[in-house]
Length: 117
Length: 115
Image (tube, rainbow over all chains, first blue to last red; front, top):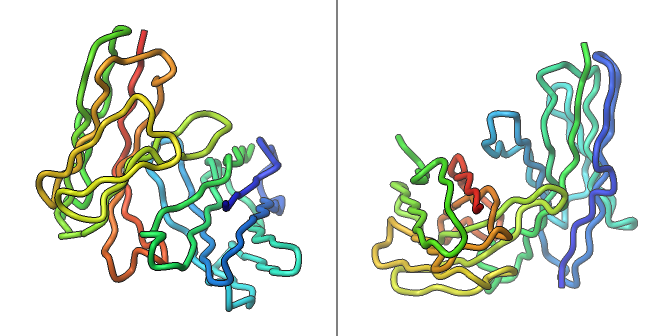
């Protein structure tokens, strides 16, 4: 069975601080996909990134960066120079790559990020 | 371009009442899903469907029924609502060809309160 753990329930930072959200996963599959979603106060789920299990390259998109390490089964998310608009709940999720997985996602518990001005 | 639409957005029920949540997608997606979101537990899969006329149980199916009579619609039913079903419900859909890479499209959520 697959599992995603986000140990940080809540994080509070002051604007312009850097913040890292941790994600640790478990799966027996060799092919899988990892995701980060953002849920702002308005409630919708916003897709941020997808990474497949064969691509361990780190990715940077503006102030966002992701560090994928298969050796530690982690897929951490860093926001550089945080802004108030980054305040949201962030979810890490896992999808197994088997055809019979039908795209089902296993989500972590979520991390509530609050950025204070 | 509506995407995934959930109806209703908010509902308050009394224990024992029944109701149906409707999810409609206009992207001709084969796969559809119902998740519930609870504080500290993330989103958990209730039921899903891989095609018209087919449904399957997810992680937390008890107390819910679903139907997929039309490809574009996925209904989630609560026959006898319980306070434990107070939650935010999300519907999602995906194309069969991209489903395994997790290209899910989510609705805006439906907040259900059971008193």
